Amino acid sequence: MSGDDATADLRGRVLWAPRAWVDGRWQASVRLAIDAQGRWAEIAPGVAVGPDALRLDGPALPGLVDAHSHAFQRAFAGLAERREGEHDDFWSWRDRMYGVALALTPQALRAVAAQLAVELLHGGYTQLCEFHYLHHEPDGSVHDDPLEMSWALADACADAGLGLTLLPVLYERAGFAQPTLRADQRRFATDAAQVRAMRDAVRAARRPLLDAGVAIHSLRAAAPASIARLVEDLGDGPIHIHVAEQTAEVDDCLHSTGLRPIEWLAAQRWLDARWQLVHATHATPAEIDAVAASGAGVVLCPATEANLGDGLPDLPRWLARGVPISVGSDSQVTRDWPSELRLLDYGQRLHLRQRNVSAAPAAGEPSTAARLFERVRVGGGAAAGQPRWGLEAGARADLLVVDGADAPLLGVPAANTLDALVFSSPGRPFRDVMVAGRWSLRGGRHPEEAAIAARFERAMRELWAVAD
Ligand code: ZN
Image (cartoon, rainbow, N blue to C red):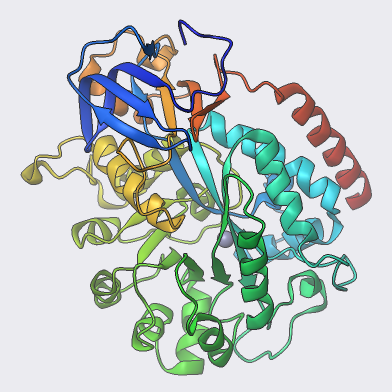
């Protein structure tokens, strides 16, 4: 920032950017007015900088939504990358991940999630959708305040200045043929009434930057009657569900119901624009078409799906059918959206032996990065239950100021900024990050970064000393 550097709160003020991403493309000389509530009052391209405006030091992008996260898994990132036996897959990773889930106190969760939140801001995210199932005490008993772990997550995001859509998860059984949870899943147990009560209590708290929806862990982890109870007359707000991430889950669903998971969901006639299908990796063309017809979105988590050996989505068909797409950091092995967008297309390139698979030149969209960014901007807003998202009037006043001095962007033509930002790495391209009209990052730094990192390191040392 130049000008009024001492002011972190810019609500009610006017900004001006030399370039900004408006209506799906770069536009020049953009005036951005913030209202008193921290939403965009007006976005006007082609306007000379006025005396009232604070001039941004670089091009402005909208912040993106991280649409799928298990924040506690940040404490496990990088610690599951050794294979000790003959075989390692999603299911053996999950058993080890449960060990971390069983050890975390509310204080440790807050420390881990605050570190994650700061890293996500650096990674260009301004809103987090937290798929939250770590509810109860380590022995499975309910906390005196059933929302204690939820508040730990909300406090962590508030500490960092990151928006949060909390999604309490319906989680009641270990598998299609197992009516109860395993012993090591005891902290997750919920029924439909509890999930709705948690959502309502979080909303009733009316904390800034905090909203809530609901989630269903998966078709294997919730009975059809319970899902029906949860979603009946639920009202507005997002509904997220893990679906078709693993082929074993598809096989179990087929065996149990006679239908594939997405096929089964579509047959219930529940799907609409509130629904977000997380992963949806193993989807047939007919299933993709059914999702497209319903208005539901998909949440892709390319780094986690690669890390866990899930498989590749049929990205060209999801794109072609116009399905809302968002990305998520999920297991937290990667915590920036440029890496997720890069990996989205790289997976397809490796598989199809083609380049720029996500581009659509016939539709006037030759840039892979620009097409993916724009789709994920809109899809992420839907995943977070925000009808408007980006640099447009009425949307929350979030933005990223791109640092043209970051090595991958040095000397890059303006039209290629987003291409270089996604496909030339590593970099740290976001100089300033605004959430709801306030700076959360400025000059590449978060004001509480050192203290948050120190609390995280202490929590990690305690966690892994115990786990050893
Ligand atoms: Zn997940």
